[in-house]
Image 1 (cartoon, one colour):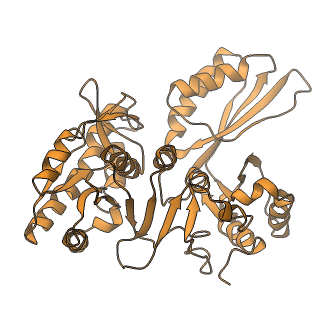
Image 2 (cartoon, rainbow, N blue to C red):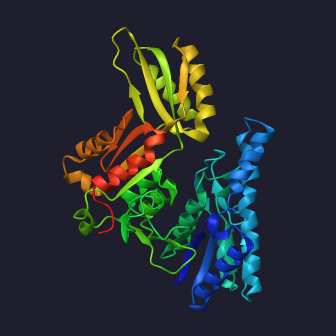
Image 3 (cartoon, rainbow, N blue to C red):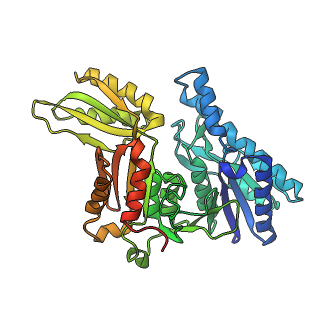
Length: 407
């Protein structure tokens, strides 16, 4: 399968019948060039959000296993319709669920991790001349329960299939033309990047850029699978996500500015200041399958302190329940939360060797009178939690301060 390509089409690409037909035409154009194709699709349009809303109309706390049963149906819709559209064009195609193509996962519902993929059925259908269409975002546990891979999980499905099938390239088709220095809807002068490193893209995805799921970038980096992000609506050049190159290290200090409105801050007040308390709290949260991002613990002057941390908004209810339980057990005070926050971040491999980046970031925010509530750093990123109402102003200020716009 030397000419095998794995393609993934996002929800906006298959939002209605006409768009599905457009995707089918794009796929068969590749087939006419002699490529074998495995195509991963997301649920149509806003289907996943609509299904989540439907569940919450039934109960505010739906069981995660049943959510996987519900949400996995979205991808099956676009999967079957795309196969029909390809067949209508006179080409052979067959659609499969994650279970049918042997995507085996662990049992962590709504955020399952892939254990193995049995490629035999896909290879068998490719050998018959079929274009294989796979429902993204889903798999099956060892208990034969349907699982899902987290929001944006179709990206992970595509990269994982590219790995096990030995594809030379994984193409991600979306509603934007590639990876930009920031969201062009906020900053029209944002530049499209020709290339970006796995590390930078991983940071961007983790910090709010919605073009790619972070776990899919981790996998691509681990196995050196090139990813090409491009538009499903035109043939313009996109952005390659590849391993870091020396010439990239000598490029701009900062590659991008990202934002996330999908976060909430929790504070557990009046915490006894003794060893093991933080370990107790965050072990309980981790056991609930919740990722904590920023953590700030105030200095104790009275033997008690406050601990603040951020989580993704979809995890807020579950985190609140766990945190209140731990607070009672350790004789802490009240637990408060704040959903009116956002995170703005700068990302770039050039930060490794350039001093003064943090100073420039903080100064840019200060000039716009934007207060910083929390700060976190990595080797190639700096993030600040601010009031949500200022986030777009902050993005524009930082994009200008680091001179990321079109020349």
